[in-house]
Length: 237
Image: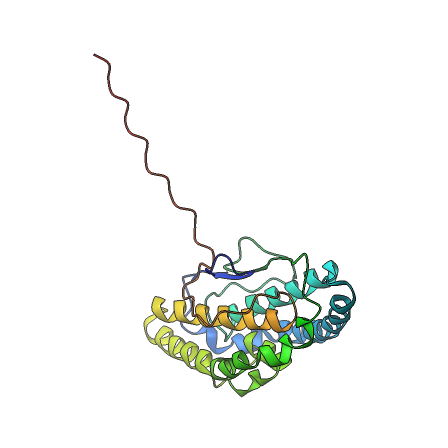
């Protein structure tokens, strides 16, 4: 399974110029988003319970719940990207669940036409357990439960995990050089890609098991290959 075939996709690009000092106050600037996200994640958890029973009885994830939950993930990723999940942009995140094409962070989840009624009982706790252990390293101990792991992945807290450490290193470098190391950025986005795949799987949004693979870089779906130029016509005669 390739990065392009997995149904959860994370895209982002570094958005210079970045202020060397703005990251010091982003915790304050992002408070309105944190408040809204608290309510959105509460609704996400409740609606996921409803989706659980819908899948048990029908094998389908209600489309309107799916679209709402994808919107919560998308909103969270944008706030995380702006704040202490990545510090990848100084553009303030929009207050919307929908996709914003000109914002530098994007999240997409393919809608599943059918989901297993049997897997729904075990994938969110038993099957995902190995990934929860990995997430505990990536975002800190809060990732041991799905809800708190999602909040930590959203950048609501600057955790003690690997992602938090890498972003802190990038912030210090940014403070003294005004440059965000591209290699650190690619690694941070790749780690978030792993985290959000697990969150979506645990939230029953796909039956495809998340790969134990780090897909680094901002582009989750590469551009199509460029066709070679056509040969020049041969002159007659």
